[in-house]
Length: 322
Image 1 (tube, helix red, strand yellow):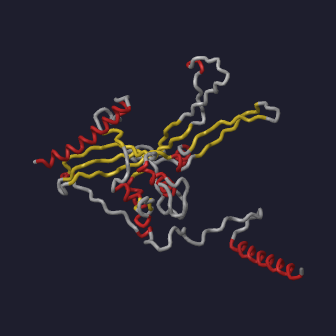
Image 2: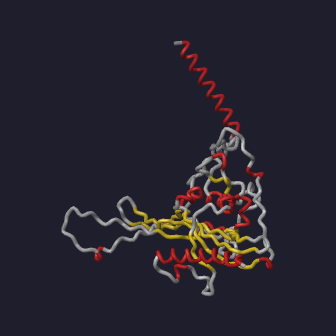
Image 3: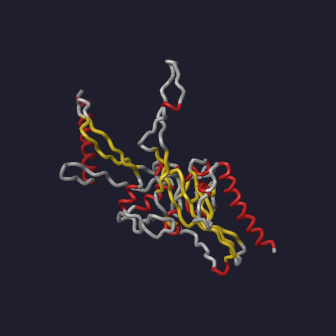
């Protein structure tokens, strides 16, 4: 019994001394609360040391002379993250060590703390001329909700306005503005991404219920009530100038399903066109209208997008034919 009590006293003294070490490394506020300790090392995702990502630089892209550009056209396309090929851009929904999604990378680049020397600028328009204010940026990342208040007797005592914030998991699309061009000096037809626009796909807090009058009445007592129909809407987060975020993309790895030892960066993904997308529109004299503005049917919109893509291919072949 004495031996057991001695062991318990020894264990308690060790725990007390260990707690003192932790307290010495944390900062205690006036209210007696302690702050979270800083991590002692970078996240470990493997058993061998990789090349330091901050040492990587984006590849220098060649800008042709105006006299060498035989043909150019602006194209608007959409990257839908719900497609299987685009899943590496959507996942993970939350950061896991060094692994983070494309939107999480963008949000980290926007951070205006002292650790981020060059915070990313988000613009209001696709011509990246007017930066967004901090208030507009925050309002685009959530939805306001009016919550009624009731007392203990169920009486309405007023209402309160809440702000429901969204995160990277609510980004399901990216609108891409790019230029296709033919360079006669290098005898190639290439493309250059100009802007990116993340799009929130959120469920509106205002639910719309189906109109009961539009359904035939039924006398069946076991008939279930109609479920509420939730509204899904799209909202632009803001426009990003691609050249301003390439330095960040070049040092952020993307998950590779085939081989974890050969991970690419987000800059590699966009330069190598390793994503699935569909054409939303091409520049035209009618105010650069999109396909859905002059074609209503979904199938016909897809055929029109294929026609634009085929036109680009034929244009390149025709120029090199002679």
